[in-house]
Amino acid sequence: RLSFIQTQNVGDIVLNLSWCLALTVKNDDLCLSPPQVAVSSALQAAKVSPLIEKVSDHKDFKKLLRTRTNVLVLYTKSASSGDAQLKLLSDVAQAVKGQGTIAWVNCGDSEGRKLCKKVKVDPSSKTNGVDVLHYKDGTFHTEYNRPATFKSIVAFLKDPSGPPLWEENPEAKDVVHIESEKVSIVLAGMNVHPAEFDGLKQEFSVKGYPTFYNKNILTNGNVFNYLFYTLHSPQPPQPKTPEVPWSESGSAVFHLTEESFDAFLEEHPSVLVMFYAPWCGHCKKMKPEFDEAAEILNKDPDSPGVLAAVDATIHKSIGERFKISGFPTVKYFEKGEEKYTLPQLRSKDKIIEWLQNPQAPPPPEKSWDEMPSNVSHLGAEDFREFLKKKKHALVMFYAPWCPHCKNAVPHFTTAAELFKEDRKIAYAAVDCTKGQNHELCKQEGVEGYPTFNYYNYGKFSEKYNGERGEAGFTGFMRNLRGRDQEKVGKRKEEL
Image (cartoon, rainbow, N blue to C red; front, side):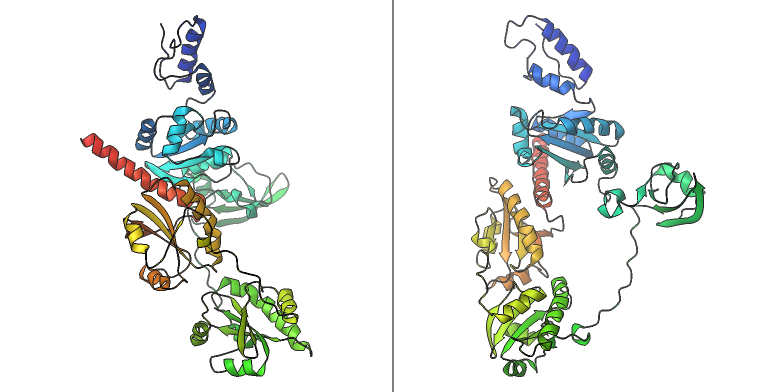
């Protein structure tokens, strides 16, 4: 009886298989003694580069992360769903040999499914059935979201914490990026940070970045200039020209103060007021639309109303009086009385159209805490007690009007869904504009929205400053779980 021999060498696998297949199989366990490896699975493994680590056991996976500092793992929903990626990664593995490790986990087989469940990875949720994650120094680092090309993956594995290649930026499409000295172009950009270009740097006296080599060189009749740069040298900040206050820019909008506000509303029966902050990006975007609409209305003898603005960062008493919690806020006043808040009025045409026929705004969208999800919505009354019961809690402090918060909500919600079965983990949210939550948010150091804080059994540990996408939120929690498992493993070894 011959047993299948465990090996990492593909040649050995094929050799052992040929022996097994040459025999008359009389017993079910012939050539399949532990681990139980099917012939079809082994043949599939034979197609993979021997430099790619095929992992299905959780202990082997942890050992791989302990012993390798730079690991890119391809998770596939089945053995066949990652064929194209495995072919590409086989070439990458050869190029980064000695610098990085590539591993493959098939979440479609029984063992691999257990491993994927333990590390909270589900490639079937991805459109192409694969998920590529990077692990650095034994813990999860980031999801690989750069182009799936040989050059990009190799560059990433050689410098996982470095910025993407310049040529991956869509704005760089008109620049020809070169990797050799034999060129015939008009403008070229070259990353000369790698040591292999030391000779070139010396020849062209490149001592800082970016360096423009302005001496014209004729090559095959074409004149070209070099731009030498490095991804490792950030540009110094450029001085900014101070902005002229909106009220001093010749605006057609009536700019009101604490002293003039009430008298102006008594004088004008129909007024649309924009409450703004000079630093607010959305206010800056709306200002020209508001200005143009004001010019049109001011010239119309039958104008249905006028436009006014209040800098709520200077005239704070007015902002407090009308409970302005976000910018820009547009309110309609009729005969001196506040009537409507109109978040939908942002463009010139909509502003004028609405003033010609003032109507109540459409009902507001359902708030986040009214929609079903696995995010725990907390308030001042239950914040402390809830977090004390959770080993790991990531809390999002937000305001409903904040666009950056709205962008983060679906990703934060998806991350909460992924970890819903783990009772020690929580993704929670606090609406800082509600009731006593404003004071709570101040106590927790919230100065802007959204703010993400991590708590360990109710104690603040650190601010989360990672990516605000699904990969960032889930990766952060995976990293914490990995540390927990590592501690448990060390304790067992000590015992």
